[in-house]
Image (cartoon, rainbow, N blue to C red; front, side, top):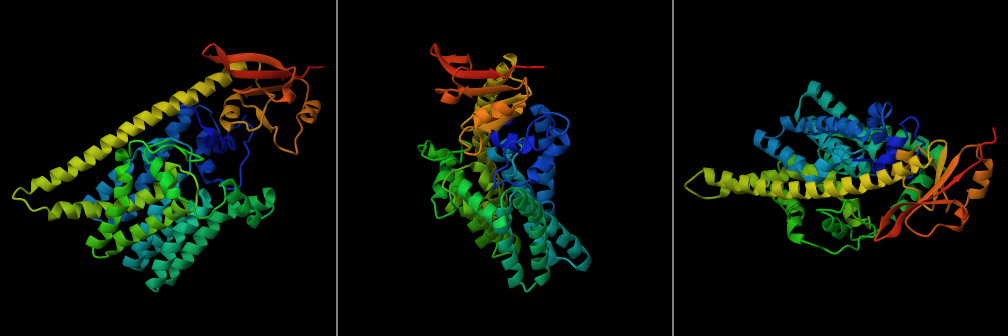
Length: 447
């Protein structure tokens, strides 16, 4: 499956021979560092995805490692299986996107904090180190998410009258923010200016019905903005409504036991900005909430199974197993459908861009448009020129370009007047009409 827009932005920063895509204000470098060891040597999406699968498998293990000392074996394994079996977990386990790794860091941080409360001095220092590293990793991946993660953990620490975890949380967040802050001075005019710009890119952070958008996308699509899609087959998204209810039930039936309570509070906290402040939907946003809410949800499921009155002790276990298998079947069906759609769509676009290469669009080259898809430039290895940028002029850039540079515009619509006179090539047709059309200009090689 070829890389998509966001993946291409992150990977282009470290892939040799690929111009860096525009790195907008909300983004952070953490996921770029994770893909760097393989992207530095190859642009092959299969190898990149293989590497990310290995990292996500390791991340799932590390996320639940602290909880192995806090939960019963049944709760531990079922929680990991419930989260690991979600279609959104499986799909993004192979992609260059930060949200899944934010989920891993969030779960590890909450577990390490609980170990700090429980363990003696020697092991407590190890847990404090894990807490600091986990929070710093989340901040390096998505700085805003780190604040919503650290807030409930700090409150729980203060309620327990434990100051040391609060200090470690603060230090971890600060350390993770350092690259983002440093870059803000270089490229965005300072941290406050970058924070405001990040909010503008998100459409402004204010009260919004994000919960409705997330429910609409619980089983796809992967992104909707504006989220005006109709609500289809809501019965297949019932798991999305049941998860928070089961999590609350898990807190109640566990009699406020620390693991279930801390996991639930932290899970709801990291979901707040996406449910109440973002006016569009993407299922990956809630991955950190899913991994934490899975723990109290499993506690509730097992309690319900234990409360079932029957002569046959195996009946409750069979019922719970049947429910989980049915849930897994729904998730697998959604995964296969969405993965097929994504593979077909991305592969189609990549093939169109490769056909431009056959027409001579290869480095040194520039792709121009009102908004150039970084996934296209990742395949073509061309740099970009946004025609809507008031600081850039196509005529000026063409005049300054070195001999031999190729300028290309790929569009499904009418071309802008700036490309009048360029070579026109119909790359794809639909219903016998041009669908994808390339406009190409080659600057004369005067050497």
